[in-house]
Length: 219
Image (tube, rainbow, N blue to C red):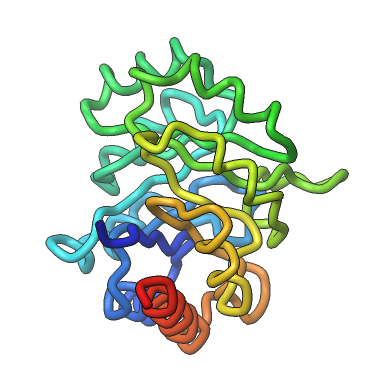
């Protein structure tokens, strides 16, 4: 099965096109005012049209209100809703029913014990993402550019559908794939020149590194 790659926090046509040209399966747009990657729903909707038929568009939110989610879904028309906050299994289920689109639930991970909550969401969330817990003082639940111990993911059910996130870049993606062997990966800050500014050349370099790692593993 081909590795599922998501480029997240996109804000410009140039960065989006680099992600699509590289073969991204998913492209993410972040709706969180404290993030340097925050984008307005109408602009995300405009960019999202460029990805139709090429990649799935993901709306990333953090404990968003129903009113905010309504606006995002109406103006962007996402294929997937990504929940990066403290949403309960019941809330996840209610949002799936409300919008009729798949939901990806994100878990902040530092150690193996942080994976125990997965069982509460199995059969509720359609997919999972594992990101590093933010450092002390950070207001961002993700996009902090720090990894966690990837080896703990080896304990997961091999049938579990998830994306590995947190601190990935062209320099370490080979090691991440070797240690965790995830079905999918997500990257944001690792392809930025400054926080919130995606660099097409870094996106291209990341895809080259992923392909090189895949070729090496196949050999």
